[in-house]
Each structure stands twice: as C-alpha cells, then as structure tokens.
Image 1 (cartoon, rainbow, N blue to C red):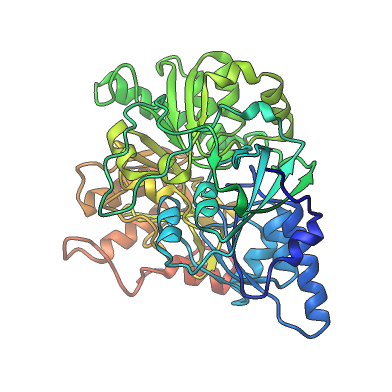
Image 2: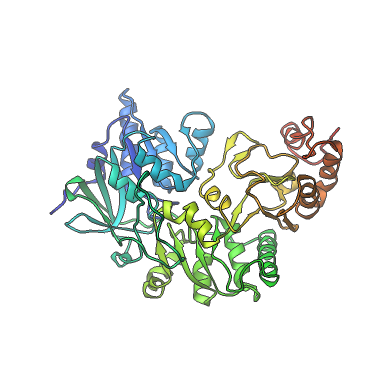
Amino acid sequence: MSFAKLTPEEAAALVANGDIIGFSGFTPAGAAKAVPRAIAARAKAEHAAGRPFKIGVITGASTGPSLDGELAKADAVLFRTPYQSNADLRKKINAGEVQFFDMHLSQLPQTVRYGFLGKVKFAIVEACEVYPGGEIVLTTSVGASPTFCHVADKIIIELNRAQSPQLLGFHDIYEPVDPPRRREIPLYSVRDRIGTTVVKVDPSRIAGIVETNQADESGVFEEPSEVMLRIGQNVAAFLAGERRRGTIPAPFLPIQSGVGDIANAVLAAMGENDDIPPFEMYSEVLQDAVFKLMQKGKLTFASTTAITASPTMTKEFYANLDFYRSRVVLRPQEISNNPEIVRRLGIISINAAIEADIFGNINSTHVLGTSMMNGIGGSGDFTRNAFISIFVCPALQKGGKISTIVPLVSHTDHSEHSVQVIITDQGIADLRGKSPQERAKLIAENCAHPDFREALRHYVELSKSGQTPQSLRNAFAFHTHFMETGDMRGVKLG
C-alpha cells in the first residue's frame, strides 16, 4: 500500500481544536519535530483570526523545543502529561496557563489504553522506515509510541531521513495484555527480547507521511564539576563497599540511572572504580557516559526506552551501529520502567533529588513546594521497587544560599518508606534499618553541608517526643527564611 505524502502544514491542517494528540518522543530522542512546529504555526494563525485552537499533548516523557517549546509559545497546549523539561512550557505551567498532570511514566501507556485521558485522535510519531504493510520502524526512542499508534484514530508519520533505517533490529516492541487477562511479562534478564522489531498497524489508519531531515534536539552535557565528581565517587564507593560485604552479589546487579549531568558523572565514576565489575543497565535513558563505558568494556549491555546522547556521541553511535547492535535494546516505557521487572531483576536505582529531608523524604519535582521543575518521570517506578534505591544531589545550591538537606521537604515525591540511601558530595547516608531519629542524625551529619549542620542538629533537638522528631513550627523555616531573604543561611529556629 502506498501512503499519502504530506507537508507539515497539510498534516497540521488535519488537527482540530480540542484534539488529543499522542506524540512520539522520550526526552528529545525520537520526538516528532516538523508537524508540531506546523501545528504551532496554525495555532498562531487561528488565534490571530479570533478562533480558539488548543490541543491535548501526551508524549512518552519530555521532548525537544520543536514540540513542547513551539506549542507552548503558540498558546496551543490545552493540557500536558506526563513529563516535560522545556523552559517555555514550564513557565506556562507555573503561571497556570497550561494544565499539567505529573505521572509515573510506566503507568502512562495503560492509562491511555483505558481512555482515562480521553480519546486520542492522532498519533504523530517519528520513524526511520515505514513498510507498505504498516510496519513502522521507530527511531531513537520507543516511549509510548506503540500505544499511541494502536489507540489513535489516525497516524501521521514523520519519516526522518536524519535517522538511519539501520536502526531496524534495535527495538523490542511488546505491549502487555490489559487486565483481567494479563500474564507476567516474560522478561527474565536484561538481554531478553520478548516482542517485535517494528510497530505493526493497519496501513489504512496511516493518514500520511511527512518527510523530514532533522537530528534529535539533544543538548551537550557539561563537563562534571568537582561537586558532581565527588557525588559520583561517593556512589561508586558505596556500591563497591556493598559488593565487598556481600549485600550486592559479586557478579553485580543491573543499574538504572536518571537523566542529566550528575547521572553522567555517577556512571563515569562507576566505570573508573576497579572494585565494580563490568555490569549491565536496565534503565529508561542512555546518555553519553553509557556509550563510553561500553567502549571500555565496563558496561556489557543496556536496555532502555531512549538514546539521549549529545550530537557528538550520536554521530559515534551511528558510525558504530554494528558494535552497539548486540549491546543495546530499545523497549516501550511500560516495559523499561515496569515495577514487576524492576523487582524481578534486582535493579539498583540512582536518581537525582531537588531536596531531601533529614527523615529520608525526597522532593524531585517542585521548587519551594509550588513551582514545577520537570516532573517525577520514571524515578518513582524504579525507587519503590529497587533492590537498593539511591538518591543523589549536591549539598548546596545557588552558590551556597540553599541547603538541599532540609528539616522537611516542601513537596514529597518519594517517601521515607521507599528511599534507602541518600548521597551528596559531603557523604553517604545508608537509611536501611534506621528509625526516624537515627536517620535524622545520619543525614544531617553525613549529607548536609557544614554550613547547615548545626541548624539541622538544633531542629532535631527541638522535638524530642514522638517517633518522628518533627517540629511543625520550624519544619519549613529553611524555606521561609529563603523566601524572605534570598538565603537559607542564618535561619533561626525556636
């Protein structure tokens, strides 16, 4: 079957005000680019003519500026889920101009299939190849694209010539049957393949193909700072120590690592630690450090839902596809982040926090408890079910004006019941088997910066009754002092 060839503008003309769209993309990797820009341009034209035009935007996770950025600037977003990282969209969300609901990424595809988010009118997905029988070869991410393609009324494909058709074979597309007929997901090792290499759809549902030629809009990772290096070294030292004492099996366990510069620094430090053997990853994103570890032989295999590499590393990846073909697999996010698999494989999770409190609760989404940063992403999928769950952050932010270790987090994403280890550039707090009072002392002494330790000690002393030594009068004193003065230093408790 031959498919209609569309320009981005012709594809955008098919979309109506109020439509709910499922876009490909998990981070900028594999995100639709040309059609979202054209939809944004159409929204501006409709608004200029006095007509309403907004769409519901669902993706796998965050995307690039051509999608989230352009739609936000065009006032074209009715609602957004499950995760974002774009400055323009974030501004709209925090101003109350876009309704954003934060979701665990493993739950999104099932939520879409159940219809909880409304009827998906179009799936707009990036591919590197489309076959006449309706077989779609995705690009550098899978995310929720298979689900979008299966539930949408119609599919628009961005056939991106910047992505090599040689990606065929990297993907493992598997969607579980929904309850009440669901069986276990038959994946028993990081390397198992349980699905197909393509997304198969009825070709009559493909509304058209838009040809593009645009690289993923991934940024360049920073060189790790001294603080990041110390965090990475502390994580590596902790894991090596656990292996030596036998709480981590000698062959090691699969690693999950979050997104960003700290995650790159942590993986690099693990690669340099001789007491950590070659290991595997079962994660949601592969960044530059992953491919460097593979080249060194320190990382033997990686399962993911997205390849989010810098432009330089992306070129290296494409130049060596044969090397990576036997070492990388791309899965849907409800498999890469699936709690059943995380628990089964014994994954060690390592994720970043905005702030942590002295009892082990983690805020990974909101600044000062109100302003959304990016979202919870997949951190909750892994943290709650990990063999060991680790959260990392620098002890200080904003040039020392902010302590990331506080008496009580201003927003809770991961409770003390799920968080086992907190690591900063100052040290390590192993919270396993510790009471709230023990945790409070351990985190304050080991993880907080010296500038704030005395204040945290004083906070614990203010309340000596109860199982958790909490002072409601002073719980947010660090935050309120910062809001009043622009600096947490000099906070007064009492």
